[in-house]
Length: 576
Image (cartoon, rainbow, N blue to C red; front, side, top):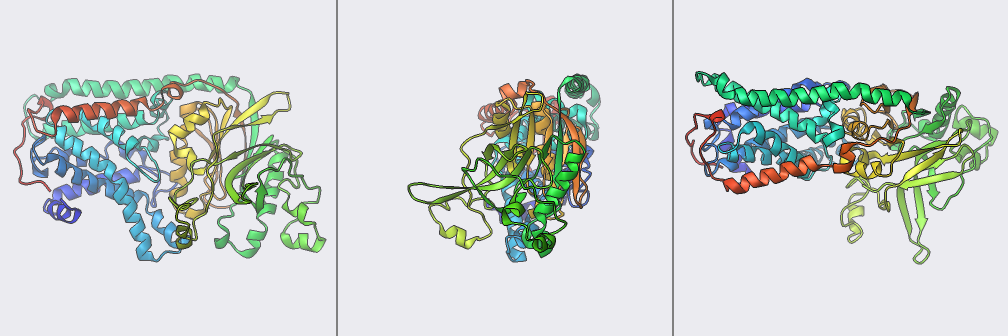
């Protein structure tokens, strides 16, 4: 059935449309969004999928559970809900495409809708499984299994897990060090399914519905309770480890200077001076390591074979005009370290020249400099953002870059690596660096965990997204890496959100929506072991295998409904 025909069929069920809309709105409101960018309404997620689950179980939603055509109806109802979730949650994609992609408003909105259509497939698969197998498998188990599998394996441009929104609910989030944030998603969907099933049983007026659902309710309560108790027990244990760990005083510098094409000329020319002035202040507050964001250094692309970037002894000027008046040499004006002497981790471009072909290759890199400007290490970004840092098949068809001139043409880094910072006491601190998009990829971050770093540093540039909720959403999706690894998580951006997060997942400090800022905090240096680091996404793989086994056993045909769903429903016409 084509999407237009499916939409016409769905429009015949206003109650179903309302259920999908209500669940969609509650879900994207549980994450940072246009109406509450700084404070996500995380608690909505615990009931967000009750309306759509109730509708998927309703006899008016299509053929009976498990009957021929049930999967198709379930897919389209779930897909509609997912489309709404992603259109509301990623509204800023249209603004990005129009402002910096220079696309017409109609095309920019089309880009947003195409993204929603792609990511909505996650809920389409979830809805299809619930509707197709709900007559054979208890939906209280089916719903979380289906969502954990779908959200992990379905393709997305911006990977997000439903459990990411629960960061303010710290005790629940602690289970991420065992099974990753997918475990939080599992608990969320189990609770939503249980509430929907109980509401349905009670609404049908069946006598003794409480006794019929008692076993399932106990199982849900036990799952939620054990997850909560684990978190309540784990938090003080990690806090004790943090208290005993050696500390490094880190200064995070946020200049509040965005994309150059959106900044006044004076602000662009002063960008390095602003960074240096804020860094000077951080050093005065005792910072032993300064962290600048991705793309912070924009005075030129640095040669990949550089071994030293000499600091400048020239006095720090108030503006570029003062440097002009003083005739400050170009080398001093372009030196990253000027007005301060401290180790610096900064984002800057790197260029390497192929000796045979003389071809230039450009990288998005993180550079670690000693207080004297020695290059202690460089990490080149591996996971590039599609259409932002490269175009698929662009090397084969270079004309693509002419069609989309706003896209960069950056090379992929060769592999993850930890950057080592010598400490004053003779020891060292290993920095696990994640550049921008890499911070929201649990699987990639686990490769960094395997390097045994002392802390995680995420440098990113969200200036492309202006003042939209994307900045807070990106932060929310990256924050669980602190819990999964039980390491401090330091995040530096050009214009927000910069932050320091402790190994429990607490936001120790973060920056305001606008304005220049410096965060100076003592962060623990820890090399712990977590179960998630070892087994990775075993929970997601297990859920996928179970879902496939259920689907194969049911062969998409109906069957006798379990007591949790009795009485069964009759077919309600043809499916889409």
